[in-house]
Length: 183
Ligand code: SF4
Ligand code: SF4
Image (cartoon, rainbow, N blue to C red; front, side, top):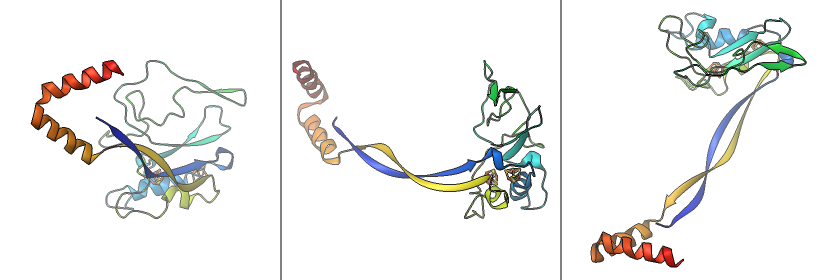
């Protein structure tokens, strides 16, 4: 069946992280965990935060890491980061909530945590971690991207449907097969 491609727009939300500006104050962790507490703002346990500031083993940089997708199994292989010639712990900057560590798991239930861009109720006009980062290590931007979407042509569907009604599906299938061989 002939299909046509039609471009649709989607809004993409981006938080840019400037590691050089992060001083490890953890205000982002505090506000995120408070926003997601039940009742709202009743506690500020960083273990409930969807952003964690990772202090690497060599204690010379802070890296804010956002909670990403939940994964059922840990990776078969591991990665190591080398930054400015220094080697960092494997898994240190990974965003996944996975069985190999406690990061990004709700402390009471063990359920995985994932950043929701503060779209929870009430939705915020800007992610709270960005608002609370007075060092501008986190900045927010929205952009539009085109996405490809296959759209069926209604009139083609109607036309094919009436041909099948008239001649039967087998005959139409044979005819299409013959035509494709000729091509
Ligand atoms: S609030 Fe900003 S500076 Fe403070 S730890 Fe978070 S990202 Fe780093
Ligand atoms: S965007 Fe909102 S949900 Fe995501 S880490 Fe920041 S404060 Fe938490």
